[in-house]
Length: 451
Image (cartoon, rainbow, N blue to C red; front, side, top):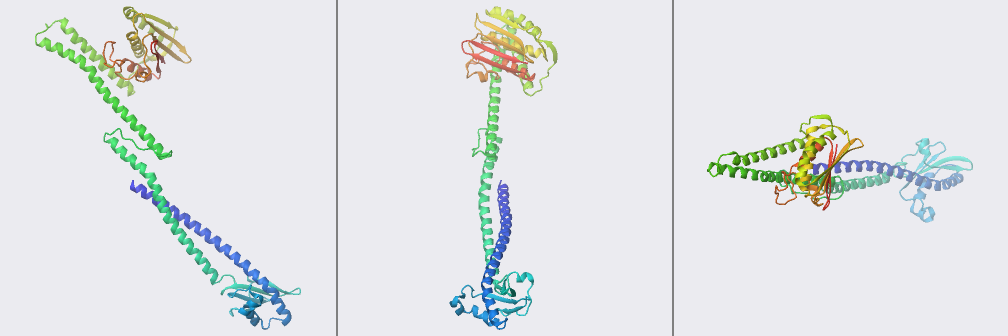
């Protein structure tokens, strides 16, 4: 995590350096060009002020004889007091004749040299009458356009830019380090939380800050941890439930076998039958658990064929009629003729039998159990209703949980192992169907299967 923090910080620094250098180059170029344009404008304005004065000098003297002394007089301090204050003390004045040959240079360096047309364009023409008699140029320092003062100014600008770049880089390091910490700190918490979950602490959660991608990652992590914790709780509950379900038949078997071994019971069919029945119960429990495990893993073998669901339901009702009569229940059926489906006939029969048995167990004497089957759009719908006590709303989410019973004591008085509805749900979903339950306390419950 430290390496990620370092990488992010260095990334901010490198980015800041590149941006600062790029901006420095642009600013330096813009300042240099702008300052040059400013100087040229300023110099030309000063030259235009000098041009009439020099034109008057040319007219009075009939030429440029003695122009050097005149220029020096313009730059003298007393000239400032006489009204020539527009000319600064550091100014350099150059006068060229009509041919571009320098006839006067206040710096005394370029006299006699010929200026190029480009250089002449930087000055102001000296016109007497309608004739061009020369050109005057104004500059600072030793060069015509670019002097020491200008270079000093640009050097100061570059120095300031360097300080700004340095300060910007330092600021980028600080800001980058802070932002990198804000990014990596939640990730560090995630790593620590993941390590704790890996060590068995499934109750560990991370704090969610903000609404960005890192916060979304933290939220997903908490959801994953919650799911893992729930799965672990279900696993532990499953082990406890299996132990509970096995305890009763094993205790019965052990009691009878000990009595038989001690000679308290004779070794006859009357006393062996309870032991045999308990072994059948254990066998059914193990088979139910195996069915659920295979279905959840998606490995339950299904022997699908095309068959008529109407015929299957009628066969189940023929066997269930006797049970209903024995319990004093009324069994009603409303089934459409010819409901073809492609499914595992035995497994679908097991689902309907499980739900129907559940309805028989929870419907009091004199109640009604109704089964309906019809075609809805492209699916077949089977609904089994009863007039039992109903299921409280708080219990509905657990109705398909393994080993769940309404009775807190987990008594077998109502029959079953608590796996029937779980098996029904897994088998229906293995066929790509759905199963739903609706219930009203005091009125009854309806299970609806769609295949």
